[in-house]
Image (cartoon, rainbow, N blue to C red; front, side, top):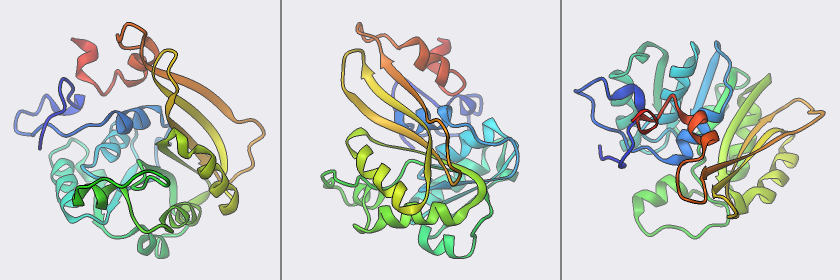
Length: 240
């Protein structure tokens, strides 16, 4: 597994026999921002190398299931899980979300995902990125419909999307019967336009939506203090 300089996922640097994982800012932000329950069942949709599932294991005592349709991702996640301190609480399956939701309705307390689609974005050229980031045009509807089916009545789900997709996603939530509970707008630096949105959703009606903003960089390109505080448990560079 390759590196993303200068960062490494914090829990793994103490294990010399484990390769450094490819860690993206989106996944670390989402995992750090999310508020999963301490116990119960958590699902990671489109796990990739398993980073979000591992973060959920680090943050909780819950049982975590990770799914992905890409066999190489499943193999990589399995290796990372098996070498982690939480291997007894982590499980990964090669299965489509649609198939998985058919047999696991109403059992998850929390769902997390860096969704494997960009609804209106240009498709990347490389085939493996195509598999990871894009599926059938109907997949966004499958994604939210499956979340509704998989969640317990009081369950919640968190995910991250490109900011330009926000209005489209909010409409799809309305169509599915899911409700926005929390939202964070992500800015690369001060005075820039938002680049991502993190959303936490629920089946329950929400009297007041909680809104916040997060800047990754200050105007001088130093890391913003709020970002550092949020991700401190997962990035080595914050302690260097």
